[in-house]
Length: 112
Length: 116
Image (cartoon, rainbow over all chains, first blue to last red; front, side, top):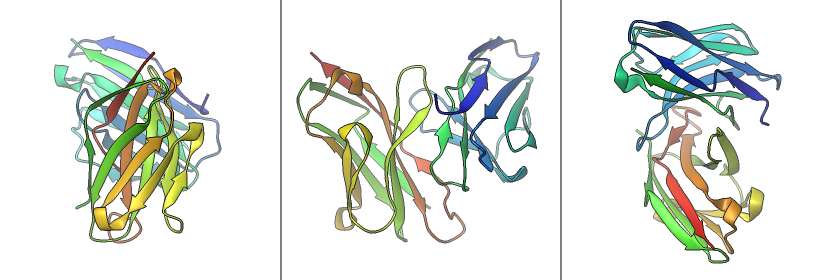
């Protein structure tokens, strides 16, 4: 157990649905991250929050909308996704920005 | 721009054999280098990292890696593979300066299979 919890573990949604991914860290960290892991591709950084301020938005389509209400919680709101968005979405946190990331187990998303 | 290349998307070894996973990076400034491991159905876990100082870095589970500046490499090794080492391994790089300070770039990953 790394102290970073992601829910749900699996999600199947249609292209017109709206859903949210949740990440919670119990480590007292100040930075949180969303990564996308697709088959046969490197991890893609999506968003980074440091002290609840977004510090990185890596050219992610607007159908993905992050929210960081406090330093312990991070959400990824999803709407009108495409089948190519199917992937494993990983949340991570760190005490110091970019140093020693702790990852959650991910949400496996399938878009039909 | 920084980049990292892992040579070989799949590596297969016998239990007890040497494990060697290759990682090369490109950089115009001194890099910070990392190896992460991902076990099935889990997130990534930090194995080891190099920032400054000794170029041979020891990590968890008996793994180590050596930073070779002349070869721009950071290969991961373990003298004797265990069945429990079967996982996907990711090399990552970040840099201590410039506009991309600290930003991690991951390689494509290498799946390690260990045979009995």
